[in-house]
Image (cartoon, rainbow, N blue to C red; front, side):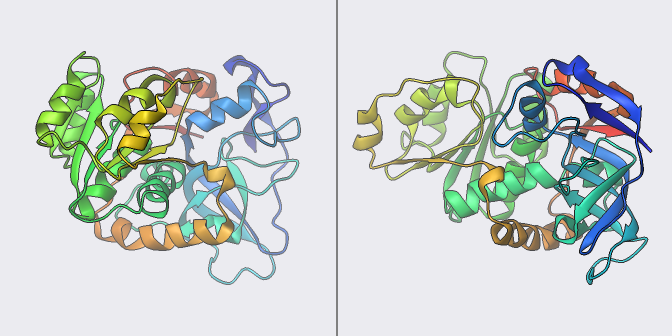
Length: 324
């Protein structure tokens, strides 16, 4: 099969399309024929330098994909050959990762893809929707009727967060940095869309909330926004830090005065049981169309380096997927 391989950590150009042996499923494992692979910022962090527990070299990047079950190992009970599926993670080994024609997964990483969703949409589910669900409900304990501010709401995680929050009955405000992104935020059902390029957008936020501020803030770029978030947060509010690209300085008194909480999260730190419960919770919304993954751009698998550059640029718009 063809797969993207990384033989050294570094810039996007270290990713090369190569021929590698097809993976074979072991006990409790599933091989998925990938029709579309999702590109996530975390993929770029792992590729550029050791991140968390780095994979052994060489490796194939990617943990999200939509496809069809091509083979199953012994002991697999809930997945069968030919099933349409999406995956949230892949099995470790000499050949792994979703940037490939075939991906090797543990059965628990493979989930049924409803017929109303395309394979490209399936590739947009794993990291974005699991992250958004974890942030909103397992970390922030978001409640119906509360106000949530989603920073960077036009990207993959932001889109998922908007849809989940709207479905939960929250008052939803999203930010974006382009006119296309702002319209996308509105299209996802947000009650208000704010342009975070404008100096006074947080003043507008306070007007929209009658001076109270949001109860929950989902923060995609903490090194830029966290200090300011704490000045507009409602009393007993919660900020969930989903992404950051550097250090940040905050005034703890802003936090203290509001009796507020800063929460951090990373899917790599979530237990298997918690991940399983997340995907169980997402299933109904995906099946009935309440949750609609949005694909902003499709690229050939060989263009993985270009996709890694695009996913880190400002002006995110939906999910980027690679097509083998």
